[in-house]
Length: 461
Image (tube, rainbow, N blue to C red; front, top):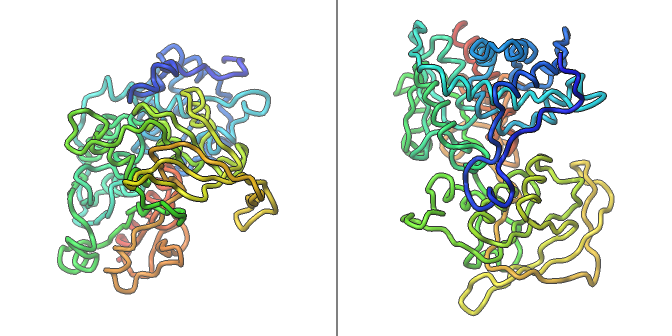
C-alpha cells in the first residue's frame, strides 16, 4: 500500500526541447514507478472507476497485477475489454472518466489509471512475441467501414468471437484519426501500427484505399460480397469553417488538412514531396484537443503560435494536460476573443487576423455561457498562417450512396440506442459518424457495443 496523496509524476521531455521535435512528450513509467503508483489503489470492491470507463476495463484487477509485478497478467486483463490499451493509455481523457470516479481522488489525486494502462501496454509491446490467434471461425463475414477507434474496437471484438472481419479504409494507412489526426508527440505511429498488427493476428483483414460509397457501396457489400452485417465507423472528417471574410486566403488550413499532412504525409520534413508551410506567425481558432494538436504542431515547425478562443480558459474543452503542455511549450492564448476577418496581402496570402473582444452572456443550448461581442474592442493579430479548428461533421458520402439510411440534421447517422442499429437491417454504426466529433474511448465503446449487438443479431438470424 502506498499512502501518497499524489500520483507518481510522469517523466517527460523538457518543454524547450520537445517544442522543437515530434518525439513523444511523455516518456512513460519505469517498472518501479508503475508498481509504486499501482500500490496507491485501494482495490475497491464496488469498482467505481470501472463505471467511468466506456469499454468497462476491469481496472482494480489489472492494477493489482501491476502492484504485484505481474505485468503480462495485467495486459491479459485489460485486453479482455480493450484491444487498444497503448492508444487509450495515451489519449483517453481519464481525468473525466475512470479517474474522476477514483476514491483516492476525494482527498488527493486519483490513481494514475491511464499511466498504468500505458505502462502495461508498452511493457507487453517490448517483451511479448506476436501470437497468431487460434479462434475458430463461425463462417460469417462482417464488414467494418473505417479503421478509426470505433471500427477497430468493433473488428477486434467480432474477430475474437469467430467472425471473419474485413476493415475497409479510404486512406492508404489504417488507423483513422489515430494515424492522421493525433500528432506523433502524443501518439507515436509505431504504437498504432503495433495495435493494428495485434488485430491482424486475431484474423482481421484490412483493405486500404477503398472508399465505401465510391469503390463499393453498402448494398454491394451485403448483397454481392457476402457480408452478413456492416458496421459504419467512418468518423467525422468533414471540417467546419467560420464563414468569415478571408477564409479562402492562401495560408489558411483546416486543422484536418494541417494535421493529416503532418501526421500521415510527414510534410514537415525537408525532403517531403508535399511540404507544408513553415510559418512565422500562426493563429489557431478553437479550444479543443484538435486545436491544441494543431497549435503544438505549428510550434514545432518554428512558428510563434497564438490560440484564439471565444470563451474563457474555464470553458476550454481540451484536456487540462494538453492545455498545460501547450502553455509550457510557449503557445499564447487569447481568450474571450473572436475572429472577424482574415486579412491578406496583394498576392492573396494571409497577413493578419482582425479580432474582437468578447464577454460571457447567458447560457446557450449547450449550457455554456454565450460569448457576446464588446463594441469598439476590435484589434489585429499579425499572422502569415491561420488554422481553423472549430469542429468537424460526418462526411455525407455514405448517406448519399445508401438508400434508406437515416441521418440527423447535422449529418450524423441515426441509431437505435447503444446497440448502434441503423434504419437498415444488419447495418450498424457508432463513434463520431453518429455523435459528431468526440473522444477516442467513447468511439471505442460505441464500436464494442455495436459488435455485441451484431453478434446477437447474427447468432439469432
